[in-house]
Length: 573
Image (cartoon, rainbow, N blue to C red):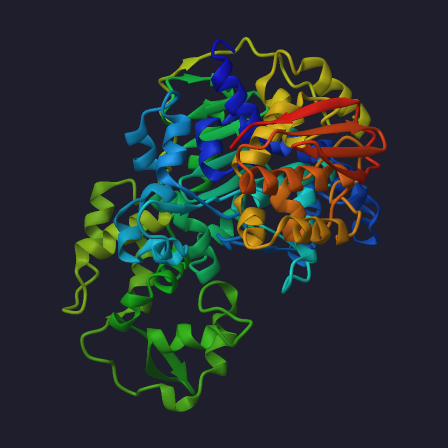
């Protein structure tokens, strides 16, 4: 890389993986996924009886089996205090040489982004808990490796692993490859300013959405879960699409993804988000647009006599039933509705939904034809409705047009291909990534995210540890040095990372209450550097210990990380 400062920031950002760091350095998103593939954690899932017989299952069944495993072992976490606070000025200073600051402010939730009008309407900053941070203070919004996700079980009030949306997207992508045996060529990771998810090119397509999966049928079923899943693509610009061939970013003029792959992906996603109109889609739309239900009624025969029921009452009954008004279970749902809900006379000022269904079926309405749209509009005769708004909402429901990065980029394709496939072992994959890391940025970043200090230089890790780990500093700011040392040494000598060479960051050690001696030494260095900003601090590591010296006062910690002998100077605060 031509800019050494940018290179160091990117490597250091690969360690901390904050929301804004991934926005600035889009290679980090795929690097995180590759680090999870390198980890033994997900490979161990294959030994779980839950995945017995996986080889005989169809790809879709393998994916749904994987989904349930993730649902059972991880929760969605958006506790913005987990990784502490920073300031807008500090983050702007870090990146002002690399990207236009106004662009960050328009595109990042921490700097006031609220997206479309939809987000203003629901007060998105309050929704995500950002409203409690006033002035220049903002939270770190960090992404976790699979190990850090698993370690949430050590935190109070967590019984399982946890992670935010980028963490879950990267976990899903890696486990789709390892467990469900989906080729990397069929997995696309997407980020918007407020969400991250994956598109999986299986059957009609599958979207991951935090812990859940969304098929094309689910996307259009009008349920509350589907509405949540639709929110990002309906209302936000997709800022990053990343794939085994590279990435494309809405801001940067250059892209590394294969242009043919990107064109194919854009077409596949667009087809996933569009459906042929039918009477069932009409019912699904009404389920989704609950504010319109008060303007509709349904005719239903009881003992051969037509009766009428408000649409909102029918959809309310769905909540406590296994049957739906749409599809082939309508009759069973209607049989569950109490007799007194029905009226023997039509309800005034309400559109008769049955008539509308018959019209849609008989006319074979095509929402791509202006003449058909006009015909349909004339069916909404009611003082309760604004016909143009209903039609606009219906068209958006049936055809979401994703705002993807503009394909008119300069495509750079000289990076070496990953060359990773499903028949490879974990060891073969790591060997392949080591071979190409000099010519593939995402592969190189994977090793910094993996945090193996025997395979990367220490400076990016230490830079992240000393500048972006405020939780441990805040927790121990009122403790004297002796108390700090006692508390750190009293923690279990247990790293959240199983392998030699791999180290947790100070706030991970503090939050999860455990660490190897080398990790404890880095945690203590973070505290002492803040307490004694002028002190000369260094850590000498060797295969079986780490020795921290602070103005010649030594603190020794036993270690099993088998680190190569080295002396790590800690920068003055």
